[in-house]
Image 1 (cartoon, rainbow, N blue to C red):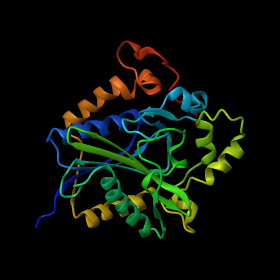
Image 2: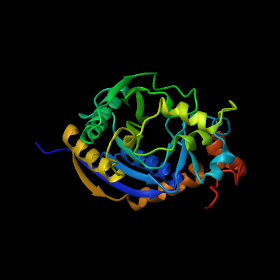
Image 3: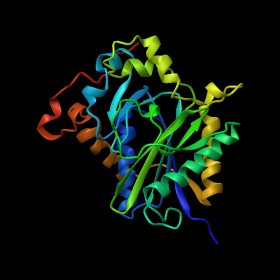
Length: 290
């Protein structure tokens, strides 16, 4: 029996707005039946902080610090909390709902993909466990990696992989990240903590809840090492054939449109506003050079 064919898109390093716009454009393609399922791997240049769809940008982030640290800021179309994206593996799975591979609901899909992530991390020698944490709909706090959700991965009690999902038109997008290295002080400074806590103390508190791959390995690995293991895991555990492609011209065009309307729009990023409000907050979200 032939294996289901998936598109594999390796986008390389892009800016945060176009990364999020391309994920949504691919979701629209799959939902409309123009594309088969997609596995996308990508990176961030410059590093970025993404916030969940329901979060208030100005309330969650220290925007001045984000600019000073050279961080892009973007709002995801998925829920959850703030995530620092730097030296990490970022993946997106876009697939029809109710297929043979994903016949169940939201949590069943999380579980199926989490098992692939767990398999890949085991290939590096990391033993992880699936959390039975909070409900996936929550968006209460600031940093996503401080609060493991259902079927997210823990290593030595620390969250090491985070994911979020959106469903639309009979298809779903699940994207997530696994940090290879992480600077917890940088993450703490990017957040609007309002607590008067020093960066050093805040970073120390984060390390009690936040994990990253090289923290738990005696021999450091690179992003490419985990990417290769992920590709092998999706092919083996889900039984799919990955066919490497690039986004179509129409998908790139739609991504650029979404970037202009939303993901590159400060009003959308800060307050989820579009249209005439697009000029609000201009200049606040541009990283400083150097």
